Image (tube, rainbow, N blue to C red; front, top):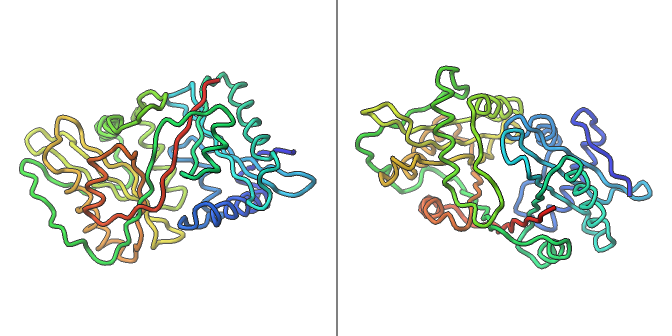
Length: 320
């Protein structure tokens, strides 16, 4: 097997990686929208917050059999690498997945990583693959989608003492430290049995995140809850609208600082965001979100808003 890195500047390699990914999606998760070459380039050039994913293409005798992605953070969890392996459905059960996974594990070891993680849909194939390679299940994520057809018949709750503020897509430098502190509230979300440390959010990471999604061609909307008496940022929700496919949007962070919970700010923020999008992006028809299955509070909010379950993803980890 030949495993070669895919540069975002190599249009032909990107095209081939996209073909492999979409072949897998059409069989394993047909509800997912097909990956576009523009989206793939964005992942490989900018990543989520300036730490781009590394893409790899696997071929045997000149035939593309699989693709892999390798992701690490430069801010935290330096012990960990997340791996993704996709094999063309018609070419599975020939050892290609095992060989490609091993190539990614070798890379992780060479960097001094002591743990690797993979994820797979809740199905016998991915579960068996993970178990054969020494991974144990550590967490479950649920993929939900809201089909937007007008505003939901749910009133925005009153939040005495708080105001909802439409934040600029690019945060002014003076406000980055406060927003970074607010973003760290996401560390309170359940991580179940995953061997991960809290994420670190210095101000420069917030700026890099906003820059990355702007470069990827997404329009970002951030709504924050501010405590009137102190001016403290109490919660936020962020949605990114796909500039290439503007009827699609993705829910990013929704979190409330521990000291400000119990005021229905999560529901108020998500409803406030829908009202904002209804004015600024009325063409949006779908919003996708992901939550840990154990995050009962946020799941309750999402179900109140009409989100539907599309699939469950199992997160696995293995020590090196």
